[in-house]
Length: 268
Image (cartoon, rainbow, N blue to C red):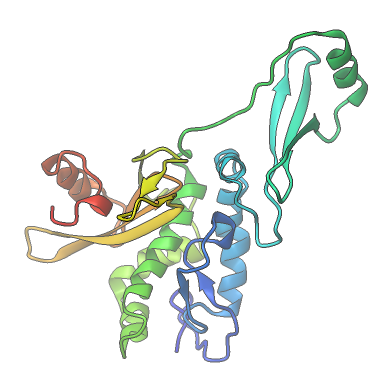
């Protein structure tokens, strides 16, 4: 067994790898021990997942969906109270109860006096609809993409070697493992359903979808296929080309299929 990122022997590794982080509500999609070595597992958590999770969008979406971190804490969000010109912080406890107070470093007396003397007021809370298409988002989705490819055949003999030794994936794996902020890997980002959308099961039961993913193969002119990983998290769809940064094949596919999501149009 070898690590799909650094290619080192990983038979003695003890970490399972969550394809989508636990802090986004994932407990089901995991790679068994050895697919990602302990060293890479720690690095990815610290340098690839954390920047996305702690971004304005990451915190805001997790706060709205009330999804706790691995330590059981729902992230807070920082806003602004114009009447006292103070930064404020919104917090939720484990039961989802909301509380508001001044952010760390702010003058609490200004906030309290304003609340006591003003009958009305307002709070400005940043609520980005989708994350920025920046380096942190791109690298985070690239990490998910390689692990999703590994997950597809994780129970097939020889699949670990297939993923590790496949040269066509080296550019993607190095982008995740080493990084290159000067050359951001392209990711197509759009919202395909509301963050808190309720779906209805065949028996009438309502449920919400936190995350889902699939792999979209698109044939090319030379009869080879480009493989795109399509993943939706809290209703935002991310699509990335595992073989290169180009998205032209996917954009053409979207045009041919009326901009429908592959996650809901597998026959296209």
